[in-house]
Length: 494
Image (tube, rainbow, N blue to C red; front, side, top):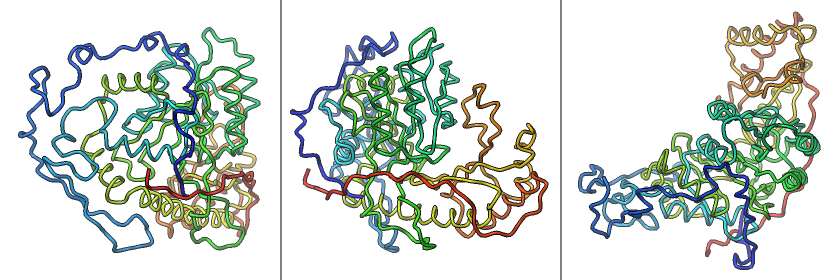
Protein backbone atom coordinates (compact mmCIF):
# COMPACT_ATOMS: atom_id res chain seq x y z
CA UNK A 1 0.00 0.00 0.00
CA UNK A 2 1.37 3.36 -1.03
CA UNK A 3 -0.15 6.73 -1.90
CA UNK A 4 0.55 9.91 -3.78
CA UNK A 5 -1.18 13.25 -3.86
CA UNK A 6 -3.80 13.58 -6.57
CA UNK A 7 -2.71 15.60 -9.58
CA UNK A 8 -6.18 17.19 -9.80
CA UNK A 9 -6.20 20.76 -8.53
CA UNK A 10 -8.82 21.52 -5.90
CA UNK A 11 -9.78 24.65 -7.84
CA UNK A 12 -10.83 22.46 -10.77
CA UNK A 13 -12.97 20.13 -8.65
CA UNK A 14 -16.68 20.82 -8.16
CA UNK A 15 -18.10 22.06 -4.88
CA UNK A 16 -20.09 19.60 -2.78
CA UNK A 17 -23.81 19.58 -3.36
CA UNK A 18 -25.80 21.35 -0.68
CA UNK A 19 -27.65 18.59 1.19
CA UNK A 20 -28.64 20.78 4.11
CA UNK A 21 -32.30 20.04 3.35
CA UNK A 22 -31.58 16.64 4.92
CA UNK A 23 -30.53 18.18 8.24
CA UNK A 24 -32.92 18.02 11.16
CA UNK A 25 -34.43 21.49 11.80
CA UNK A 26 -31.97 22.33 14.58
CA UNK A 27 -29.01 22.29 12.18
CA UNK A 28 -30.53 23.88 9.09
CA UNK A 29 -29.44 27.29 10.33
CA UNK A 30 -25.72 27.53 11.10
CA UNK A 31 -25.36 28.81 14.66
CA UNK A 32 -22.17 29.39 16.62
CA UNK A 33 -21.78 29.28 20.37
CA UNK A 34 -23.39 32.53 21.63
CA UNK A 35 -20.25 33.38 23.62
CA UNK A 36 -17.83 32.63 20.78
CA UNK A 37 -20.07 34.36 18.25
CA UNK A 38 -19.55 37.58 20.22
CA UNK A 39 -16.04 37.11 21.59
CA UNK A 40 -14.30 34.85 19.07
CA UNK A 41 -11.63 32.34 20.16
CA UNK A 42 -8.86 33.59 22.48
CA UNK A 43 -5.28 33.15 21.29
CA UNK A 44 -1.98 33.27 23.12
CA UNK A 45 -0.96 36.65 21.64
CA UNK A 46 -3.96 38.71 22.75
CA UNK A 47 -4.83 40.34 26.09
CA UNK A 48 -7.60 37.95 27.03
CA UNK A 49 -9.80 38.93 29.96
CA UNK A 50 -13.05 37.54 28.59
CA UNK A 51 -13.12 33.82 29.25
CA UNK A 52 -12.38 31.45 32.07
CA UNK A 53 -9.01 30.52 30.58
CA UNK A 54 -6.27 29.46 33.03
CA UNK A 55 -2.81 30.98 32.79
CA UNK A 56 -0.36 28.51 31.17
CA UNK A 57 2.21 29.07 33.94
CA UNK A 58 -0.09 27.04 36.19
CA UNK A 59 0.18 23.96 33.96
CA UNK A 60 2.45 21.49 35.80
CA UNK A 61 3.81 19.70 32.72
CA UNK A 62 7.24 21.08 31.74
CA UNK A 63 8.06 18.47 29.11
CA UNK A 64 6.54 15.27 27.75
CA UNK A 65 8.78 12.55 26.34
CA UNK A 66 8.00 9.13 24.92
CA UNK A 67 10.17 6.39 23.48
CA UNK A 68 8.76 5.39 20.10
CA UNK A 69 9.67 2.29 18.18
CA UNK A 70 10.42 2.34 14.50
CA UNK A 71 7.33 2.11 12.30
CA UNK A 72 8.13 -1.35 10.94
CA UNK A 73 7.37 -4.21 13.35
CA UNK A 74 10.11 -6.14 11.53
CA UNK A 75 12.77 -3.91 13.08
CA UNK A 76 12.94 -4.80 16.80
CA UNK A 77 15.17 -2.62 18.91
CA UNK A 78 14.92 0.45 16.68
CA UNK A 79 13.52 3.29 18.76
CA UNK A 80 13.41 7.07 18.81
CA UNK A 81 12.41 9.77 21.25
CA UNK A 82 9.36 11.97 20.87
CA UNK A 83 9.29 15.14 22.96
CA UNK A 84 6.95 18.07 23.55
CA UNK A 85 8.40 21.23 25.06
CA UNK A 86 6.51 23.71 27.18
CA UNK A 87 6.94 27.07 25.45
CA UNK A 88 8.40 26.41 22.01
CA UNK A 89 6.89 24.76 18.96
CA UNK A 90 7.93 21.14 18.56
CA UNK A 91 8.79 20.73 14.90
CA UNK A 92 5.42 20.87 13.14
CA UNK A 93 3.55 20.53 16.44
CA UNK A 94 2.36 23.17 18.88
CA UNK A 95 4.02 23.88 22.24
CA UNK A 96 2.75 22.17 25.38
CA UNK A 97 1.22 25.45 26.50
CA UNK A 98 -0.91 25.51 23.34
CA UNK A 99 -1.74 21.81 23.46
CA UNK A 100 -2.90 22.03 27.08
CA UNK A 101 -4.98 25.18 26.61
CA UNK A 102 -8.61 25.44 25.46
CA UNK A 103 -9.05 25.35 21.71
CA UNK A 104 -11.93 25.22 19.25
CA UNK A 105 -13.95 22.20 18.13
CA UNK A 106 -11.99 21.63 14.92
CA UNK A 107 -8.91 20.13 16.57
CA UNK A 108 -5.27 21.20 16.89
CA UNK A 109 -3.92 22.75 13.70
CA UNK A 110 -0.91 20.44 13.28
CA UNK A 111 -3.02 17.32 13.93
CA UNK A 112 -5.63 18.32 11.35
CA UNK A 113 -2.99 19.43 8.86
CA UNK A 114 -1.45 15.96 8.76
CA UNK A 115 -4.86 14.31 8.44
CA UNK A 116 -5.81 16.57 5.52
CA UNK A 117 -2.60 15.56 3.75
CA UNK A 118 -3.13 11.88 4.49
CA UNK A 119 -6.80 11.97 3.47
CA UNK A 120 -5.88 13.61 0.18
CA UNK A 121 -3.26 10.96 -0.51
CA UNK A 122 -5.37 8.00 0.60
CA UNK A 123 -8.78 9.01 -0.80
CA UNK A 124 -8.47 12.12 -3.00
CA UNK A 125 -12.08 13.24 -2.38
CA UNK A 126 -13.47 14.29 -5.79
CA UNK A 127 -14.91 17.63 -4.67
CA UNK A 128 -13.13 20.79 -3.54
CA UNK A 129 -14.63 21.97 -0.25
CA UNK A 130 -14.00 19.00 2.05
CA UNK A 131 -12.28 19.26 5.41
CA UNK A 132 -11.38 17.21 8.48
CA UNK A 133 -12.45 17.69 12.09
CA UNK A 134 -10.84 15.94 15.07
CA UNK A 135 -12.94 13.35 16.90
CA UNK A 136 -12.77 11.23 20.03
CA UNK A 137 -13.09 8.07 17.95
CA UNK A 138 -15.87 6.64 15.87
CA UNK A 139 -18.46 5.84 18.54
CA UNK A 140 -18.64 9.53 19.40
CA UNK A 141 -18.53 10.48 15.72
CA UNK A 142 -21.44 8.15 14.91
CA UNK A 143 -23.64 9.87 17.50
CA UNK A 144 -22.80 13.30 16.09
CA UNK A 145 -23.29 12.31 12.44
CA UNK A 146 -26.64 10.67 13.20
CA UNK A 147 -27.83 13.70 15.16
CA UNK A 148 -27.40 15.94 12.11
CA UNK A 149 -29.88 13.94 10.05
CA UNK A 150 -32.12 12.11 12.53
CA UNK A 151 -34.14 13.20 15.52
CA UNK A 152 -36.38 11.35 17.96
CA UNK A 153 -38.83 9.11 16.09
CA UNK A 154 -36.88 9.13 12.81
CA UNK A 155 -35.45 6.05 11.09
CA UNK A 156 -31.98 5.31 9.74
CA UNK A 157 -30.90 2.44 7.49
CA UNK A 158 -28.31 0.06 8.96
CA UNK A 159 -26.83 -3.29 7.99
CA UNK A 160 -28.80 -6.27 9.31
CA UNK A 161 -25.85 -7.05 11.59
CA UNK A 162 -24.11 -3.97 12.93
CA UNK A 163 -21.77 -2.47 15.52
CA UNK A 164 -23.43 -2.56 18.98
CA UNK A 165 -21.97 0.84 19.87
CA UNK A 166 -23.80 2.40 16.93
CA UNK A 167 -27.03 0.59 17.80
CA UNK A 168 -26.76 1.81 21.40
CA UNK A 169 -26.35 5.37 20.13
CA UNK A 170 -29.59 4.98 18.19
CA UNK A 171 -31.41 3.69 21.27
CA UNK A 172 -30.35 6.72 23.34
CA UNK A 173 -31.29 9.09 20.50
CA UNK A 174 -34.64 7.28 20.07
CA UNK A 175 -33.86 6.81 16.38
CA UNK A 176 -35.12 3.54 14.94
CA UNK A 177 -32.77 1.34 12.89
CA UNK A 178 -34.14 -0.14 9.67
CA UNK A 179 -32.13 -3.24 8.67
CA UNK A 180 -31.12 -3.88 5.07
CA UNK A 181 -30.10 -7.34 3.87
CA UNK A 182 -26.44 -8.29 3.53
CA UNK A 183 -24.44 -10.90 1.65
CA UNK A 184 -20.75 -11.80 1.75
CA UNK A 185 -19.88 -8.32 0.41
CA UNK A 186 -22.00 -6.42 2.90
CA UNK A 187 -25.07 -4.33 2.04
CA UNK A 188 -27.09 -5.68 -0.89
CA UNK A 189 -27.75 -2.64 -3.16
CA UNK A 190 -30.83 -4.26 -4.73
CA UNK A 191 -32.33 -4.80 -1.28
CA UNK A 192 -31.42 -1.22 -0.34
CA UNK A 193 -33.11 0.16 -3.45
CA UNK A 194 -36.22 -1.93 -2.75
CA UNK A 195 -36.32 -0.79 0.87
CA UNK A 196 -36.11 2.88 -0.08
CA UNK A 197 -38.59 2.57 -2.94
CA UNK A 198 -41.22 0.90 -0.76
CA UNK A 199 -40.69 3.05 2.34
CA UNK A 200 -43.95 4.31 3.83
CA UNK A 201 -42.73 5.64 7.17
CA UNK A 202 -44.05 8.87 8.65
CA UNK A 203 -40.68 10.59 8.01
CA UNK A 204 -38.39 10.03 5.04
CA UNK A 205 -35.22 7.96 5.13
CA UNK A 206 -32.33 10.42 5.01
CA UNK A 207 -29.21 8.41 5.91
CA UNK A 208 -27.60 4.99 5.84
CA UNK A 209 -24.92 3.86 8.30
CA UNK A 210 -22.44 1.31 6.92
CA UNK A 211 -19.12 -0.32 7.80
CA UNK A 212 -17.82 -1.11 4.31
CA UNK A 213 -14.45 -2.69 5.13
CA UNK A 214 -13.90 -5.64 7.50
CA UNK A 215 -17.47 -5.10 8.66
CA UNK A 216 -18.19 -5.54 12.36
CA UNK A 217 -19.30 -8.25 13.03
CA UNK A 218 -19.40 -10.11 9.68
CA UNK A 219 -15.93 -9.26 8.38
CA UNK A 220 -17.45 -8.47 4.96
CA UNK A 221 -15.64 -6.06 2.64
CA UNK A 222 -17.41 -4.35 -0.23
CA UNK A 223 -15.74 -4.65 -3.63
CA UNK A 224 -15.28 -1.52 -5.73
CA UNK A 225 -18.29 -2.53 -7.85
CA UNK A 226 -20.41 -2.96 -4.71
CA UNK A 227 -19.37 0.45 -3.38
CA UNK A 228 -20.28 2.09 -6.68
CA UNK A 229 -23.67 0.35 -6.67
CA UNK A 230 -24.35 1.45 -3.07
CA UNK A 231 -23.39 5.03 -3.92
CA UNK A 232 -25.70 5.02 -6.95
CA UNK A 233 -28.64 3.93 -4.78
CA UNK A 234 -27.81 6.67 -2.27
CA UNK A 235 -27.85 9.22 -5.09
CA UNK A 236 -31.16 7.89 -6.42
CA UNK A 237 -32.88 8.17 -3.04
CA UNK A 238 -30.97 11.23 -1.77
CA UNK A 239 -29.34 9.47 1.19
CA UNK A 240 -26.36 10.61 3.21
CA UNK A 241 -23.86 7.78 3.72
CA UNK A 242 -22.19 7.56 7.14
CA UNK A 243 -19.04 5.60 6.24
CA UNK A 244 -17.72 4.13 9.50
CA UNK A 245 -14.37 2.67 8.40
CA UNK A 246 -12.01 1.89 11.30
CA UNK A 247 -10.69 -1.24 9.52
CA UNK A 248 -10.03 0.39 6.13
CA UNK A 249 -6.26 0.37 6.62
CA UNK A 250 -6.38 -3.26 7.82
CA UNK A 251 -7.13 -4.73 4.40
CA UNK A 252 -5.43 -8.13 4.43
CA UNK A 253 -5.81 -9.46 0.91
CA UNK A 254 -7.05 -12.94 -0.05
CA UNK A 255 -6.13 -16.08 1.88
CA UNK A 256 -3.02 -17.70 0.33
CA UNK A 257 -3.74 -20.86 -1.62
CA UNK A 258 -0.82 -22.66 0.03
CA UNK A 259 -0.56 -23.55 3.71
CA UNK A 260 1.94 -20.72 4.20
CA UNK A 261 0.58 -18.61 7.07
CA UNK A 262 3.35 -15.99 7.05
CA UNK A 263 2.87 -12.31 6.31
CA UNK A 264 2.10 -10.91 2.87
CA UNK A 265 4.13 -8.08 1.30
CA UNK A 266 1.57 -5.33 1.85
CA UNK A 267 3.50 -2.81 -0.26
CA UNK A 268 2.30 -4.76 -3.29
CA UNK A 269 -1.32 -5.07 -2.14
CA UNK A 270 -3.57 -2.13 -2.96
CA UNK A 271 -6.63 -0.99 -1.06
CA UNK A 272 -10.20 -1.11 -2.33
CA UNK A 273 -11.21 2.54 -2.86
CA UNK A 274 -13.29 4.09 -0.11
CA UNK A 275 -16.81 5.47 -0.54
CA UNK A 276 -15.28 8.90 0.10
CA UNK A 277 -13.09 8.47 -2.97
CA UNK A 278 -16.25 7.95 -5.08
CA UNK A 279 -18.17 10.85 -3.52
CA UNK A 280 -18.76 13.31 -6.34
CA UNK A 281 -21.76 14.82 -4.50
CA UNK A 282 -20.35 15.31 -0.99
CA UNK A 283 -22.92 12.94 0.53
CA UNK A 284 -20.41 10.74 2.42
CA UNK A 285 -19.49 11.51 6.02
CA UNK A 286 -16.38 9.42 6.57
CA UNK A 287 -15.37 8.38 10.09
CA UNK A 288 -11.78 7.31 10.78
CA UNK A 289 -10.19 6.28 14.05
CA UNK A 290 -6.72 5.63 15.44
CA UNK A 291 -8.18 2.97 17.75
CA UNK A 292 -7.30 -0.01 15.53
CA UNK A 293 -4.20 1.45 13.88
CA UNK A 294 -2.37 3.16 16.78
CA UNK A 295 -4.04 2.49 20.14
CA UNK A 296 -7.69 2.53 21.34
CA UNK A 297 -7.40 4.68 24.43
CA UNK A 298 -5.73 7.53 22.62
CA UNK A 299 -9.42 8.31 21.88
CA UNK A 300 -8.61 10.19 18.71
CA UNK A 301 -9.88 10.04 15.18
CA UNK A 302 -11.14 12.32 12.43
CA UNK A 303 -14.25 13.06 10.39
CA UNK A 304 -14.09 13.95 6.68
CA UNK A 305 -17.06 15.77 5.14
CA UNK A 306 -18.02 18.94 3.23
CA UNK A 307 -17.10 22.19 4.99
CA UNK A 308 -20.69 23.22 5.73
CA UNK A 309 -21.25 19.88 7.51
CA UNK A 310 -18.00 20.33 9.44
CA UNK A 311 -19.30 23.70 10.68
CA UNK A 312 -22.06 21.73 12.41
CA UNK A 313 -19.59 19.11 13.64
CA UNK A 314 -17.60 21.90 15.26
CA UNK A 315 -20.73 23.06 17.10
CA UNK A 316 -21.41 19.49 18.25
CA UNK A 317 -17.84 19.08 19.48
CA UNK A 318 -17.90 22.40 21.33
CA UNK A 319 -21.16 21.50 23.07
CA UNK A 320 -19.89 18.05 24.16
CA UNK A 321 -16.19 17.13 24.19
CA UNK A 322 -14.85 20.54 22.97
CA UNK A 323 -12.19 18.51 21.13
CA UNK A 324 -10.08 15.42 21.87
CA UNK A 325 -7.31 15.80 24.43
CA UNK A 326 -4.83 18.36 23.15
CA UNK A 327 -2.00 16.39 24.71
CA UNK A 328 -3.02 13.25 22.85
CA UNK A 329 -3.40 15.18 19.60
CA UNK A 330 0.06 16.64 20.20
CA UNK A 331 1.64 13.23 20.70
CA UNK A 332 0.00 11.89 17.53
CA UNK A 333 0.91 15.02 15.57
CA UNK A 334 4.55 14.89 16.69
CA UNK A 335 4.72 11.17 15.87
CA UNK A 336 3.16 11.42 12.42
CA UNK A 337 4.41 14.83 11.29
CA UNK A 338 7.96 14.70 12.61
CA UNK A 339 9.09 11.37 14.10
CA UNK A 340 7.77 8.99 11.43
CA UNK A 341 6.57 11.29 8.67
CA UNK A 342 4.09 10.16 6.03
CA UNK A 343 6.43 7.43 4.73
CA UNK A 344 6.91 6.01 8.22
CA UNK A 345 3.16 6.13 8.86
CA UNK A 346 2.46 4.12 5.71
CA UNK A 347 5.24 1.69 6.66
CA UNK A 348 3.53 1.26 10.05
CA UNK A 349 0.15 0.60 8.39
CA UNK A 350 1.68 -1.97 6.05
CA UNK A 351 3.35 -3.70 8.99
CA UNK A 352 -0.01 -3.83 10.82
CA UNK A 353 -1.70 -5.31 7.77
CA UNK A 354 1.00 -7.96 7.43
CA UNK A 355 0.76 -8.87 11.12
CA UNK A 356 -3.03 -9.24 11.04
CA UNK A 357 -2.93 -11.10 7.71
CA UNK A 358 -0.59 -13.66 9.27
CA UNK A 359 -2.96 -14.01 12.24
CA UNK A 360 -5.96 -14.35 9.91
CA UNK A 361 -4.19 -16.98 7.81
CA UNK A 362 -3.27 -19.08 10.83
CA UNK A 363 -6.68 -18.79 12.46
CA UNK A 364 -8.54 -19.73 9.28
CA UNK A 365 -6.23 -22.68 8.67
CA UNK A 366 -6.92 -23.99 12.17
CA UNK A 367 -10.65 -23.29 11.89
CA UNK A 368 -10.77 -25.40 8.75
CA UNK A 369 -9.03 -28.15 10.66
CA UNK A 370 -11.17 -28.17 13.79
CA UNK A 371 -14.64 -26.97 12.73
CA UNK A 372 -15.41 -29.39 9.89
CA UNK A 373 -19.16 -30.03 9.85
CA UNK A 374 -19.66 -27.67 12.78
CA UNK A 375 -19.34 -24.20 11.22
CA UNK A 376 -19.01 -22.48 7.87
CA UNK A 377 -17.54 -19.09 7.12
CA UNK A 378 -16.27 -16.68 4.48
CA UNK A 379 -12.59 -15.83 4.77
CA UNK A 380 -12.36 -12.12 5.66
CA UNK A 381 -10.16 -9.91 3.48
CA UNK A 382 -10.00 -7.08 6.04
CA UNK A 383 -10.40 -6.40 9.72
CA UNK A 384 -10.12 -8.59 12.79
CA UNK A 385 -13.11 -10.94 12.69
CA UNK A 386 -14.13 -14.37 11.47
CA UNK A 387 -17.94 -14.62 11.30
CA UNK A 388 -18.97 -18.25 11.61
CA UNK A 389 -22.37 -19.79 10.93
CA UNK A 390 -22.70 -22.46 13.59
CA UNK A 391 -24.40 -25.72 12.61
CA UNK A 392 -26.34 -26.81 15.67
CA UNK A 393 -27.99 -29.71 13.86
CA UNK A 394 -31.42 -30.67 15.15
CA UNK A 395 -31.02 -28.15 17.98
CA UNK A 396 -30.91 -25.20 15.56
CA UNK A 397 -34.59 -24.31 15.99
CA UNK A 398 -34.44 -24.63 19.77
CA UNK A 399 -34.56 -21.15 21.31
CA UNK A 400 -32.32 -22.32 24.15
CA UNK A 401 -29.62 -23.76 21.89
CA UNK A 402 -27.50 -20.61 21.56
CA UNK A 403 -27.57 -19.74 25.29
CA UNK A 404 -26.64 -23.36 26.03
CA UNK A 405 -23.78 -23.15 23.53
CA UNK A 406 -22.47 -19.98 25.17
CA UNK A 407 -22.67 -21.67 28.56
CA UNK A 408 -20.81 -24.71 27.23
CA UNK A 409 -18.14 -22.41 25.76
CA UNK A 410 -17.71 -20.59 29.08
CA UNK A 411 -17.38 -23.87 30.95
CA UNK A 412 -14.93 -25.06 28.31
CA UNK A 413 -12.81 -21.95 28.68
CA UNK A 414 -13.39 -20.02 25.47
CA UNK A 415 -15.37 -16.87 24.63
CA UNK A 416 -16.56 -15.59 21.27
CA UNK A 417 -19.28 -13.06 20.59
CA UNK A 418 -22.74 -14.41 19.69
CA UNK A 419 -24.84 -12.82 16.96
CA UNK A 420 -27.55 -11.43 19.26
CA UNK A 421 -25.96 -8.05 20.21
CA UNK A 422 -25.20 -7.32 16.55
CA UNK A 423 -28.55 -8.31 15.07
CA UNK A 424 -30.96 -5.54 14.16
CA UNK A 425 -34.31 -6.89 15.27
CA UNK A 426 -37.09 -7.55 12.79
CA UNK A 427 -39.54 -10.39 12.27
CA UNK A 428 -37.43 -12.15 9.63
CA UNK A 429 -34.32 -12.10 11.80
CA UNK A 430 -36.20 -13.38 14.82
CA UNK A 431 -37.58 -16.31 12.83
CA UNK A 432 -34.29 -17.26 11.16
CA UNK A 433 -32.70 -20.46 12.52
CA UNK A 434 -29.15 -19.36 11.56
CA UNK A 435 -26.86 -18.68 14.47
CA UNK A 436 -23.46 -17.04 14.28
CA UNK A 437 -20.35 -16.46 16.37
CA UNK A 438 -17.79 -13.71 15.86
CA UNK A 439 -14.22 -14.73 16.60
CA UNK A 440 -11.71 -11.88 16.93
CA UNK A 441 -8.21 -13.04 15.97
CA UNK A 442 -6.49 -9.77 16.95
CA UNK A 443 -5.86 -10.04 20.70
CA UNK A 444 -5.31 -13.66 21.75
CA UNK A 445 -1.78 -15.00 21.45
CA UNK A 446 -1.42 -17.14 18.34
CA UNK A 447 -0.49 -20.25 20.34
CA UNK A 448 -3.96 -20.00 21.89
CA UNK A 449 -5.77 -20.21 18.53
CA UNK A 450 -5.78 -24.00 18.36
CA UNK A 451 -6.89 -24.60 21.98
CA UNK A 452 -9.68 -22.04 21.49
CA UNK A 453 -10.98 -23.76 18.37
CA UNK A 454 -10.73 -27.21 19.98
CA UNK A 455 -12.80 -25.97 22.91
CA UNK A 456 -15.34 -24.37 20.56
CA UNK A 457 -15.64 -27.60 18.58
CA UNK A 458 -16.34 -29.60 21.74
CA UNK A 459 -18.96 -27.05 22.86
CA UNK A 460 -20.81 -27.16 19.51
CA UNK A 461 -20.69 -30.96 19.43
CA UNK A 462 -22.16 -31.10 22.93
CA UNK A 463 -25.19 -29.03 21.85
CA UNK A 464 -25.65 -31.14 18.73
CA UNK A 465 -25.51 -34.25 20.88
CA UNK A 466 -22.88 -35.73 18.58
CA UNK A 467 -19.42 -37.14 19.07
CA UNK A 468 -16.62 -34.83 17.95
CA UNK A 469 -15.04 -36.13 14.76
CA UNK A 470 -11.36 -35.70 13.97
CA UNK A 471 -11.10 -33.99 10.60
CA UNK A 472 -8.80 -31.69 8.70
CA UNK A 473 -11.03 -29.48 6.58
CA UNK A 474 -14.26 -27.52 6.60
CA UNK A 475 -16.36 -26.35 3.67
CA UNK A 476 -16.29 -22.58 3.57
CA UNK A 477 -17.67 -20.02 1.17
CA UNK A 478 -14.75 -18.13 -0.33
CA UNK A 479 -14.91 -14.33 -0.73
CA UNK A 480 -15.70 -12.72 -4.04
CA UNK A 481 -12.53 -11.49 -5.71
CA UNK A 482 -12.29 -7.71 -5.81
CA UNK A 483 -10.53 -5.49 -8.31
CA UNK A 484 -8.16 -3.14 -6.52
CA UNK A 485 -6.47 -0.08 -8.02
CA UNK A 486 -2.83 -0.22 -9.00
CA UNK A 487 -0.48 0.99 -6.24
CA UNK A 488 0.97 4.46 -6.60
CA UNK A 489 4.11 5.94 -5.10
CA UNK A 490 4.26 8.31 -2.14
CA UNK A 491 4.98 11.93 -2.93
CA UNK A 492 6.20 13.35 0.36
CA UNK A 493 6.88 16.83 -0.94
CA UNK A 494 3.24 17.91 -0.66
